[in-house]
Image (cartoon, rainbow, N blue to C red; front, side, top):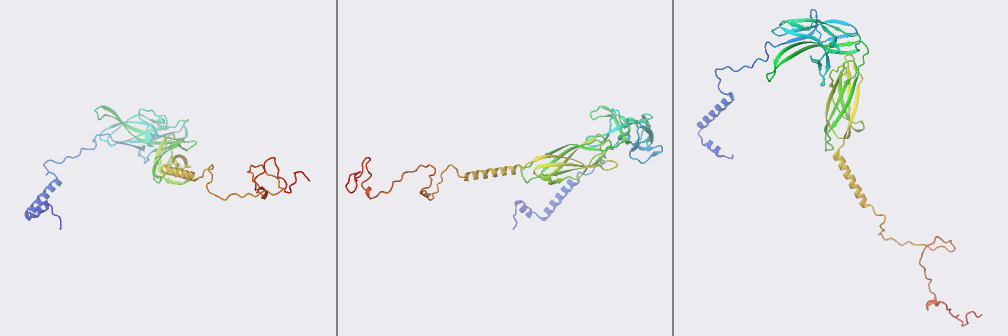
Length: 402
């Protein structure tokens, strides 16, 4: 029989019509909460436009005298002293005329591996300085494109290898910061320039440093994370990429883990990049060795693999403590059971039996012994003789008489 609470008994005493009206009222209240307040005559607010219709919008791409050529970048192979003329297309995508500053600059690899161009306040010293435009300022009407010519002249003393930069179209505008201060904004869009100067090509990648960090767990059969941080440098004269992986070995070359290869960013000559890999689930096996395995490549071919190792101690402290304690217990137990060499033996045994020396045998080493009395004969019953006297002969004659 189900348990009846006071509220249950009260509900059972209500007439059916009252219960139905209460349920209808409750359902109406819930429906009102779910649907919200009734709509009014005002329209719902619309989100504000995400962008200003008059904002500056433009595009930059490699082009030719008659328009874009379908190239993604400017790519050249030139000898020292050579000159080439090309075009950059700048398209005004806004609804008002824009005035662009068009010029060349150098590229570099950022610390996080990104491709970047020098800021406007830094003068170019490499391929950006070899790019010349007839004039710096160009005005483009709304919805129009200007195919702007430029010249690239390679110095006669240019070093062989890759030289990277960009052709920039920049718009300077006045803006206001969040705290109300007026600033000058320099917005830039560029098309990349990849130039290879003829000569000896020396691709090379160097792993400059490897650092290994490991948080040893107390549990000897536990697992922990191994962090490997390594820095690579493009020590050659061409841009390189490739993949990198980390192999974790234990004592005796026992492979514990291997990471999946990760893509390395494009490194320009002289650039460096730091990679951090986290290897999970590594057991503490006393000594861990991490090997950085690089597979570098250039735009032309693959390069020989590059490896470098670093080690870190990973002692299983709890297991070592247990072994030390067990060894100390065994040592103390064995020491207690070992007899002392100076203590006499308490186990009785048969007395040693010594044989008398044979007659006429040479005397052995001197020894100290107690005198043994000869057994007494019949004449000795009266006791031992007195010193200085002699017993008379048995026939009554005097001593010395014949």
